[in-house]
Image (cartoon, rainbow, N blue to C red; front, side):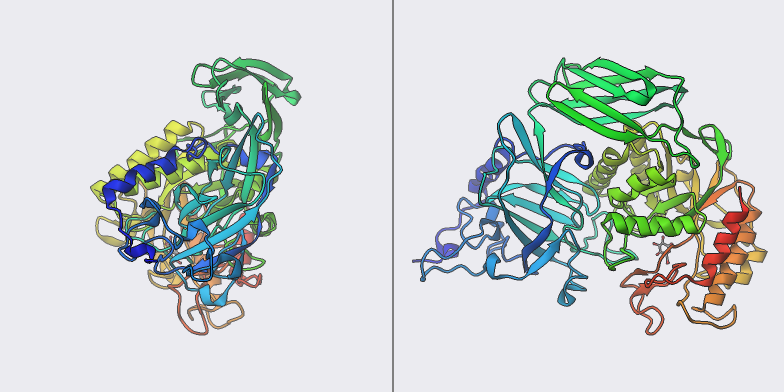
Length: 618
Ligand code: GCB
């Protein structure tokens, strides 16, 4: 018997029909951007230990001519997604999921296996399951909270699709593929950094790989409530606006009931032929979601076959000249930046306990605001912020040197932003969508970010747009700083990062700096900070000591207080976080040390400087 790779390799032309077939299997199409409300629906979790195979050469994906097995007429047994076993003792199959080791899902691979700590490449995962969900009058979906970075998904040997982007949810309908017994789900997750990616090659955080958030099975009725958006009318805070979107054969001209018992709202809506019903409801009884009283209403939507309940707060957020107004009242954003690392286990955070610990620390610091940097964090964070009355900045991972001229890169960034907004648009706590971080100005970059901002506004008229920009000298004078960036005209909140006292002189330098801000907009300092190794002490000009960081916070706060448009800040950063850029032995050892808290949960002196400042402010 000839090995498969010698038995007549089909040419590209032959295979695309087969490839197409993969995508035409009824019920196997990838979903569009709606979040399908996974958080609110009953589901079956596929969490647990999954078998895995590390595949740096993508041997289970390509044949030796580097042609994808899935594009071949006969993928052959060595395509890992077929999960093949030798049919007899003479048969050649060079992998075996069932004899392979296991990794916990959800979870990053880096912090589960020492040998995978620095690994960047492909890992295959396999789990098997039965399902109790009946197909009668139902539809079944496979939902991923997030998987970093490129994920190919195969169920029972069939390709469901590919998702690109490490931090947003995606799902596939599997109604026609799922069997009652012996289902096997195989993922190929590839976290290789690529220049054209979003983010690109260069970042300052750990590139944790794997299905880092929950994977679950969801059951819906044949026609179901796929999406909903309820928010205050931006021109009239006594009106709730938005829409409900049904999906399925009966979604057109279908009645939907909207029920908010506490507001005595009980309304019948009717969808149009696309399955959408617009909402416009007047009420003068709305208790607005606020920092002191983060009121959430139970909102129930029901179509004939489907009922869905969400907890939604109503508040307005706007700007007027250099003020940020929450429910029409000026606020100061007492914030902190946060990376999504688990303060409990280390590694990528994903549990509600992780989220609670991080937000509890922010609370203790006196914060009313958090900047979730530099990519969408897990949904627990924003759900909890909703409950706790903490305002949130969410960010698309357009970071540093993105390939602005590459149309696919824009599509990718737009897709990730769309998926984020789809997931979190009903969270009152979220007030700012951030388009990017520290991106160098150029015409292609301005066009790219301008398009993203327009997209965000079209998807969600009820929030503010920003981006963490960079500052520069004013008319060449190093002592005077300004924001000279065309994108500053587009944003609602003028945010920028500045590192005077760390990358730019010593902390005492801040005393000599003044600011000229020409834009009539509220200013938010999205980052400042410096590194300190917790427990290291010395004088205030000795780098890496807690005293240096403390002094830097004191001087920076003084400098920023003279900025008359200052309406908030989110210093860098709550907790030390892992970064391969940070290699200094005995100090960094792989950690960015700008945290106010060490990775072991110990507070540094600067924590208390910021805490005092926040406690002294309204
Ligand atoms: C920045 C980046 C942030 C880095 C930080 C640093 O400006 O926005 O991602 O981690 O500086 O520590 O240098």
